[in-house]
Image (cartoon, helix red, strand yellow):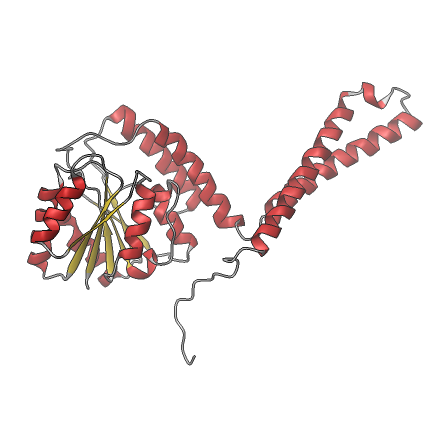
Length: 313
């Protein structure tokens, strides 16, 4: 199979027939063998009924339905598990992503050797204050921390080689940073293509202000887990040791000062309490790293390494 098109959706019954017909036209024009995997994320409208109706007329359409709303990341993760195509395309169901972009995205993967290609909605039709400006801020932060030169990490229109989606796990609200997950999994050739952003034709946006706070916290999580997930002591142990050492040195200085120079009581000096606090925090950080190491060592995934290929075995 050439393509798997994974479409996470929540209450999008109005747009699905038009989107499915558009995708079918593009697939037929380019001669692709394909499947459309519609991930119903616990919709409360008639989305599932529409998927079943579309399936009856187009056997390339498949559907997976969650019992309740789990979020876009869960929908993408299950869609990636089900995908069989050599190239996997993700796109939103609200008709703001154009299926006409799919052939060019595939060409970049197959002809130019990219592992994944992310869309860049350079010209947007969203509200400038509530979406465009915050998005620019978070994309700049993501570029700075991940060193991935993308302008639009959260663009729903992306293309992946099959081995990429089978090597990553999208959880929580990490769908915003799939390129970062791919990089941590060892896929370095990540490209970008300017794509069309269409005005919303059906329904309303499903995202509120909380996504900006959650997006920043998720970026911190990805950065930490990617760098220290299998060696937490390298982070907690380092800062714990430095904190304890600083507190210990201050305590020794205060003790020497009391007995040989200044007879003022140690407990009457503010630095004494700072030293005690530093040693307590240092001990807690060190213990956190030690417990993290125990958990990591006993994890069933501690030796899950991604092997690209083998020969002679």
